[in-house]
Image 1 (tube, rainbow, N blue to C red):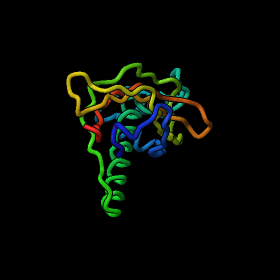
Image 2 (cartoon, rainbow, N blue to C red; image 1 turned 90 degrees about the vertical axis):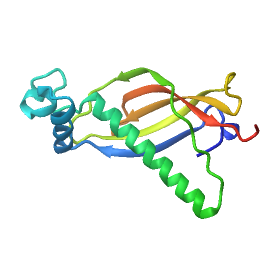
Image 3 (tube, rainbow, N blue to C red; image 1 turned 90 degrees about the horizontal axis):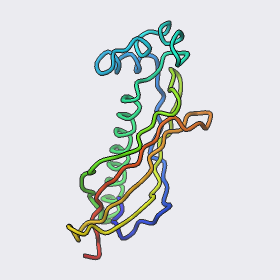
Image 4 (cartoon, rainbow, N blue to C red; image 1 turned 180 degrees about the vertical axis):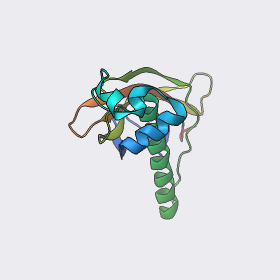
Amino acid sequence: MYYFDELKVGDRREFGSFTFTAEAIKAYAIQFDPQPFHLDEEAGRNSLFGGLAASGWHIGSVCMKLLVADRQRQAEAAAERGIDFAVWGPSPGFRELKWIQPVLAGDTITYSNEIEALRASASRPQWGIVQARNTGINQRGDIVYRFQATAFAPRRDI
């Protein structure tokens, strides 16, 4: 992971893909979002979605899982090369969460983020604040999910 001082507005990276199978959609729904169109193919076909649809919370959970796994891979690669790896702080929140199109059984979503804004923290000078747009795109190139995230990144120059 990069230090705040090494980041630029416009930096973009893909951090993983996931195929939403019917089994995975149902397993998530049973535990966390038991609505008929997430649990049953026929109910999904008869809904506005037109098919068995993944919960929006499932789509977001996968995004987080892939983001954390990507950070772990980056940390391990940096450690193998003897490179200092920045450990980011918590996120103070997100906004503009949108589920733009349904994610149906069989869809593969590729997740990415792009830095939109950077600013130094006024109250914590050793940290910078990063705002990034996180996006999920299906195998047809359609944006299906997005939100703006904010996170604290350590500054190397302080």
